[in-house]
Amino acid sequence: MISAMFVRLLVIGLLGFVSLLKPSSLTYTYTTIGAQLFGINDVGQIVGSYGGYTGFEYDQGAFHSVPPIPRDINNVGQIVGALSPSGGGYLYFDGMLTLLNNTLSANGINNLGQIVGNADNGAGSFTGFLYSNGTYSPINVPGSSYTQAYDINDLGDIVGFFTYAGEITTQYIHSFVYRNGLYSVFDVPDAVQTYPYGTIVTGINNAGDMVGFYESPSGRGSFAYSGGVFSTIAVPGAFESTTAFHINNAGQVVGQYSADGSSRGFLATPVPEPVSFLLVAGGVVLAAALISFGRSCHHLIPLVSRRLICCATAASILTSASCRASAGASTQSSSAKTATPASLPTSTTKPLRDSVRARSNPPRLLGPVPIDAQKHIAEAAYIAPRPRSSRPAAS
Image (cartoon, rainbow, N blue to C red; front, side, top):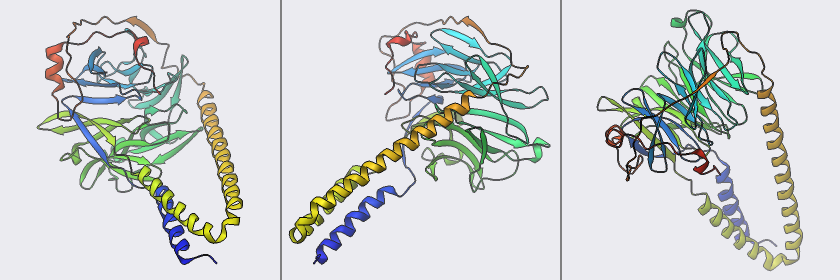
């Protein structure tokens, strides 16, 4: 007969494992800097600007000059952005500046080199675009008066924001997710639904985790959305002024917040949940339960073990197949877009010459305390960009 002790140990162990499957909101640690941060890749390279439009890249403890208002950077080191607030989308890589003509801003780039952003639709409003393999494709939510595309992941999923058709000043802002050829509307539940407020999604990673900001009755707030759960992103003491922009595949988020009348940047790093501890504790408890069970029913242990192994193997195979099918469908959908709007001609490339001088001991951009990047960059000028071939590859 199975002992009461075995039953108690088995229940406790199973509860420990089940707790790992329950989604929960994330918490973050924050590192701040005296400059705006816009994009981050999986290698930890970050792009931003200070003093308004002066662009920089941070890489392995050094600053590098880049064109104004950089918005995003991929794992190869390709950077996209806008030359000015009034327009001028670009791609910058290895000292070469590629102008995305007639675009207002290039906002996001994935590791395949696909770029999304927004352009003038010729009617005094905006249209989103995808630039892939030399071809522009429109990104417009059906029934919208304007659409802005803000980020794209390696599966071709695109996020951004829009308003429905009609007078823009009477509509509040929604966000969208474009996946497998379909648009889905995304709104934070307690977002204020009056113009110019609403929900703005600005970043998505390969896991489908999204970040952005919204206007609530208590002010502006930023969020991360993962597995159906919302998490708050707020620099301590700056909830109403925190704006999240991009997220990498490690879940790190960059953005800006207001402090002392000026804009500052932040890096938010998710705090790991105690998964390892729970797994070990659950394993120990289950082992104790099996030992207790084995004393009285030792002849059943081989059979039970074989059944558990078979179940685990089957689940692993099914999960892998599902992931491959999903990824394949997303990639196929992205490559199927071929329309080229006449308002978006081909791009032009020209060398961008930087006036730089090196500094032997560059200041570290990110640290445990706030750093005035503008002061340090002004002192150091910039660190000359080095060949991308010497940069580490993303894992």
